[in-house]
Length: 259
Image (tube, rainbow, N blue to C red; front, side, top):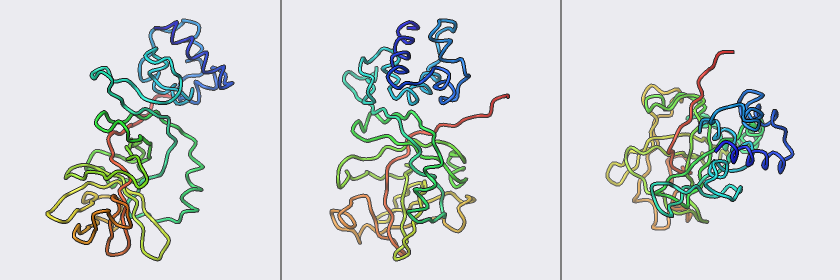
């Protein structure tokens, strides 16, 4: 695998006009990590190393591993299912996630420009057409669900305009965008779903760091068959509206390493 991997890494470096050292550092690896692979001075690299390299080289893990000959970011073939597709992508941070923190659109997009990180994200085999995107957890509101500050969340987003309806079930964690009526401000937060009869509760856990925001309740009897404002994933609230962006399926956590 080493020679094929080296050839594919070299091909992507040439296509992007990047040096091995610059790409290694951008991936959060040691300066000589790629050079060692190219020269054969390292053993078989860990999959975690290849996962870090793929976004920087603007390609897929499956291409670097020789599973797929197409370097474009498309789909990963899952070994456990013939023809089964798992969406695979390189994603920047789409938003910082924090309950109770409201902001205006201009400030929101300005803050995003300061975070230059990109992440390799994989979708879910049960939702092969849903797009995986990366979000950063910006508070401690979901610690009781074992999602911690600065975790990277993989969220699968439904396709279509309007998008496909997200099938909500108790216990799932979703990413929400909540707007306050007439104020022009919004909140992006992760919330746990609880279905109670004809009501759906979107909750952060007790003891969270999200100020006085604990629960948003929507009444399904107030929504038509096509959803609120013709969006099946948007619901009216007592102070505005809340939209379900996608389903949280995975977290990635970075632990400190010695200097």
